[in-house]
Image (tube, rainbow, N blue to C red):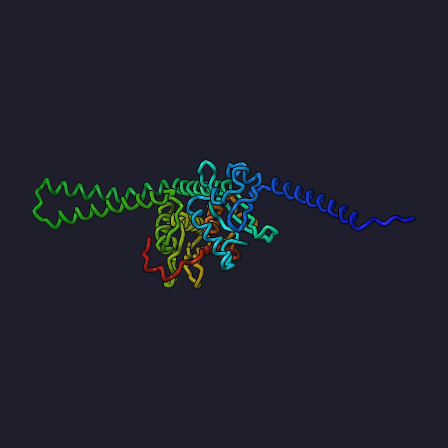
Length: 395
């Protein structure tokens, strides 16, 4: 005779399987939480911590038993803790999401009081026990340290390129300073001779002293420009006048080489706004481009360098061109790579650093290689500042 299990037996077996399935699911979930690289914290709608995985324990310094059942504010700095209850209350009352589903960078607080930069993503789940929120917390300290090292490295490379440029400018710099200093000595000697003869004409004495002062200021100006160029700066960006930076870059570059006979034409856009940039870094780009242009026109019968500034409504463009021979096709591929210079002198860092600076500012540096009777043209683009900011003044 065939035996048919009764309903009670079936239900009992179903409950046993359900308990086993739930146990397996909970074990699987616990394993996932504890093997996650990022911190995972689960709270209820009152802010009470329900779950605290091992990554959270490592990040904040609390064992789970010391935080589960406490308000999540215990792992927040005071300025975030004060707002958190208001956020939860506002969401319960209005349903308006301010953080949920939106990742953002905030700060957490270690058990020892140290402030930790973190990236927080929050999700929501409806459970039989009510609404719960799942926070996934990523430690940003390693990323911030890497970014800081990269900024410092870029600063060192820019400084090294400037030192290299100054080294090549050494002889010309001595020549530049020699002229005003020689004139200064001659004027002062003239005053000295005049005083020994008891000059009676005040105008001559005054003119000699004025000339001496002018030459001293000229020498001081040269030294000041070189000091400013060598300054590593503090990597702060501010609203700057590109055309003024270009003026100074042209003067600096002309000091470093024989510029006699080189025609420099300049076309400036009268609508050019101020640009938010690091002035020392941007000026380094200008000097690099101008030095390359001077090298390109060397030996040309009528050497000429063209500088154009343009503004198209949202980008500032600076184009530096020359009437040299252009860039050879075999040199174009490695043009913006570090240590790939074809020059006898130089480290091959100029264009590589220049592009890096442009891109770190949200712009770019590109080249039309020219050739076949045309010189090369380098185009620097930078995001433009708001023209309305003109009233803030120039640096």
